[in-house]
Image 1 (cartoon, helix red, strand yellow):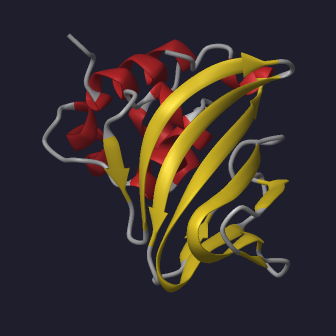
Image 2 (image 1 turned 120 degrees about the horizontal axis):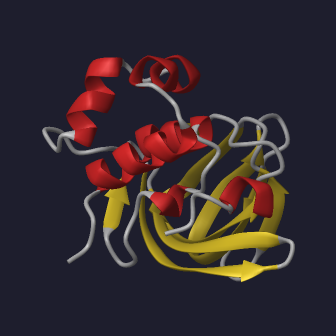
Length: 174
């Protein structure tokens, strides 16, 4: 049986030696919210999980199971798998982007993202340097800077690669 998101978060926080208060301070997520997540009294949104894993210097996949969808305000994603590809750990997601813009906070230092459009048109990339992409086009950019996602003219489907430097992923891989 698979470990829950809450149990994974509690274990990861313990492995990192980070208190609930410290994780709240680092992530900007309230202590009550983190406690409710760890005790499975609340579900987590994609942006919350990213904030927590970034604060713990772990890949997003450290809290997710393959093929289990997770949603944010404008992005729904499914982890397809993760592979060590030197010098990184690469996680692969299939995501659906909606018209609502997704402003993403910086991830851990050295994290990069690659977006490949499967269907539709999107505007993606670092804040102030976004690019419009259509089906079959890709963009790799620094994920450790503020960045944006948005579909243009209806939902769009993308493949998202998260490239985590090995130092970030060493203890966070599940």
